[in-house]
Image (cartoon, rainbow, N blue to C red; front, side):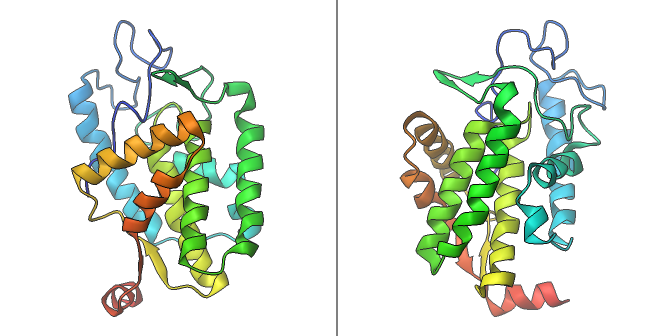
Length: 226
């Protein structure tokens, strides 16, 4: 899988209180002060944790579409790396000219967004509807950017699980497969995220999800049954 981690994912404003003094490296439980070393360690650990999450049963829909569950994913993925795992950020961050949600509004905005995603499930009839739902969901969660690090990975894992939930409750047979995403695809996805944040237009995000949402094959189903 292409490395989605980028400086787009976590923008830094001057000297962040989350970073080591005089550096842009996030304070971490591993005591690593080199960004290159931290990237390697983080990638290995989060890949392992994301694989573990794929084997876990999903919660009931009433619990799935809550900030509490969304935040718990961040804690699970990053708890061995960052002291702020499972905590929403308390400082403003921006990327270029695009500001993300102010900290004091994160909880209410996230709660509203997740509730809207739950309500929109009743309108999903086919693949095009799922793609619209995924694009809307990622666009909103990206602009909320609730965590100081790991927003993209948590959002993508959440949406992967959401597709599994649709399979269980709406009778679909899809999977959100990011394993074959190339560096070129990754760049297009980042550009689509920026475009969505700046304009509110999620069409480019929908185009990306069209390349990653597939019907499950017999091979995939066999693997899951083992």
